[in-house]
Amino acid sequence: MKTYLLAIASLIFVASCNNAAKNKVEGTDAQAAASGTGAELTVDPSASSIHWVGSKVGGSHHGTIGIKSGSLAVNGEEVASGSFVIDMNAIVDEDLTEAKMNEMLVNHLKSEDFFDVAKYPESTFTITKVEALATPNDSVNYTVSGNLKLKDVEKNISFGAKVTKEGELYKAVTVPFTIDRTQWNVKYGSKTLFANLKENIVNDNIELQITVVAKAAQ
Image 1: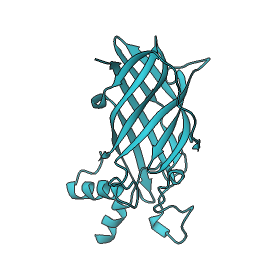
Image 2: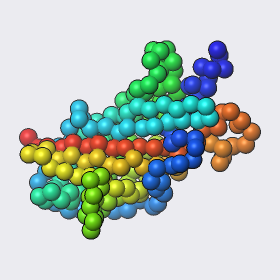
Image 3: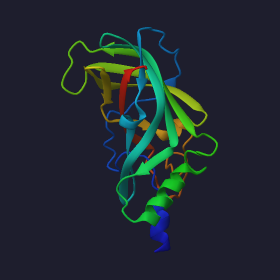
Image 4: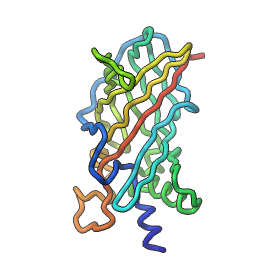
């Protein structure tokens, strides 16, 4: 039982162990923030979140991370600039129904082994570029690039997103995409960095999907 609980506690935000990482993106050097101006929108934290999928050898989990605040500048339906703050204390697991095991997993993710939430309670994403696709589809009409800051590391990533306007609300939903957590100094259980981990290997990939809803600033 003890071994089982330790195995559950060591799971992290990673893509499936079959190595079929969805839309893998590489973190590159941070870029200058987009400076476009327009109508100011405020991100609605209650309607915005980041969905994560996690697994290691023998199991997987999924859940959300809260978005604390943010703002966007828009021209018509075009997003010109913006950023949002990720609340690392709002990590939630959605599949473990046993309360104690759920708490163990979440607390481990918040610990120094992983995201060290006591030291880094917030992460950020700052838009550096938004480009309309020449041939949009039902899932993607823009490519969004931005600086993702986790812990003490800031790197630029790009991914597809569907940006829509419904009345006074703007909604952006990214495609599921995958990053390598070790690029942001989240190293626990990485087979790339550590030898002889056996069944304690944790995949380096993190699968994320971001939903941001914003409305006119009051």
